[in-house]
Amino acid sequence: MLTIEALNAMSAQEFTAALGSVFEHSPWVAARVAALRPCVNREQLHRLMCAQVAQASAAEQDALILAHPRLGARGRQRDGLTRNSAREQSRAGLDACTDEQFAQLLSLNERYMSRFGFPFIIAVRGHTPESILAAMSRRLDQDPATERATALQQIERIAALRLADAVTDAPLAR
Image (cartoon, rainbow, N blue to C red; front, side, top):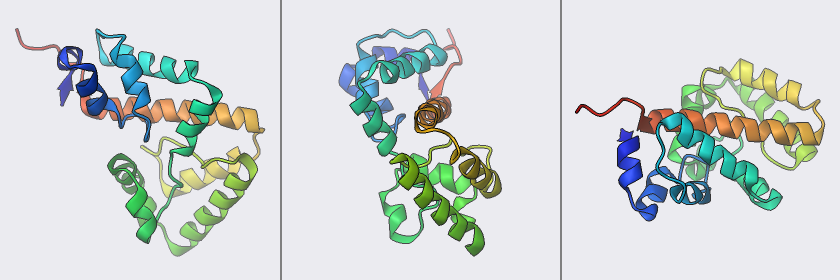
């Protein structure tokens, strides 16, 4: 696990390599934060990263949203998942859905993509296939602007969880 002190001491290139996967296929977020160091803790690091996303152009935000995989990938589709996404989806039970749940997931994914033009995004940690399907159904009723904002909020939540897995806030023993 990385410490804030170690991250602060890294070159910009090392920092970007260490945290480039926190935001799915978007190392530009970490690269922009590298110049803003030092960070005092993981929470500040997360806030700085989220601020870079908020300040990004609409096109960059759209690319970040589109970088996320559809939920419930199976077979060869799983080959395109990042290690983080595969682990997160597996922990949520999406790779062990019943055939009925999988069919519903595929149908909702298609309806969602058709309506909004981007994949359904949810921080799956703590969810079950049933709660994910319920959230997908609910969110299909949102207007596009609200759903885009919700997707970005979920991306921030995913990033917070990934940072918690990778970076310790524990002070160094002195």
